Length: 327
Image (cartoon, helix red, strand yellow):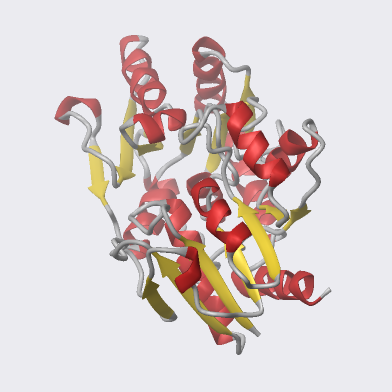
C-alpha cells in the first residue's frame, strides 16, 4: 500500500508530534508499505532518522498519487480534501486551538470528508461532543528504549521530574507549575530535587537542579528512572502526552490534572497515578501525598508501566492502522 503523510503547512520539528509521525512512517515502511511524507518546508527534526521518502511540494496538485493520504494537522486538512487520492484520513493528535479558535477547529474537522482517527480517548470524547465520530488508534511505544533500570532506590532525596517548554504553542504543558511546585516544596521544608528536559527554551539556572536539552533516548530513560515522581500538569490541547508514558515505562509514578484534554488516558487516579483537580494547590497536595507515601509511590509506578505496556508497540498499532485503511 502507498501511503502519504501530508504535512503541508504543518512541518517537522523537534517535538513529540513530529517524533510520532516519523516513527509511525518508519514503522509502516518496515511493515512493507511504500510511505512518503510531503511537506512545504524542510525536515527540521534532528532527533531521529527519517527512513521514508520526503518530498517538498507547495500545492495539493503536486502531491504524488497514493492509495491513502493522511492529514497530520488542522492546516493540512484543506490540501488533503482537495487532492485526488481516494482514501482520505485525518489523524488528530491534538486539539489545535493554538492554531485556530475552537469553533473553527470544529468547523474544519466536521466539514472535511476525511475519516477521522484520534490517538486518545480524551480527544475522541471531545470531538464526540460536537457530533464528530472517530476511530481510536494510538501510536504505540518504544519498549526497547524505555524500561526500568533499578537506580531510583539509590536516591538520597526525592527527585521530581518534568518537561520544560516555552512559547504560546507549548503553554498548555504548564511547565511553570512544575517549577513553582518545586520551589514551594523547598520553602515547606521538603528535601527535593527537580530534573527537567525539553527542546523549547531553557529554564533559569536556579529553577532546576538538572536540565537536558534535546536528550537522546538513553539519557531520557536514565532521567525517567532517576525521578521518583513525574509531574504532568497539562492544561489543554493534548492528544496522548508522551513523556509521562515513557516515564511510566521506567516505573516512575506520575501526577497529572483531571482536565478533560490532559492527554493522560493511561493515568487512572489511585490505580496508575494521581490526578489532581485542575488547580495548583490540589496539584501540590498530590505531590506531597506521594512524597510521604513511598509504598503508594512505588506501586503506582509499577501499575503505570503495565498500563502503558497494554497500549501496544508502534508495530502493533500501525498494523491496526493498516487494517483500518483496508476496510
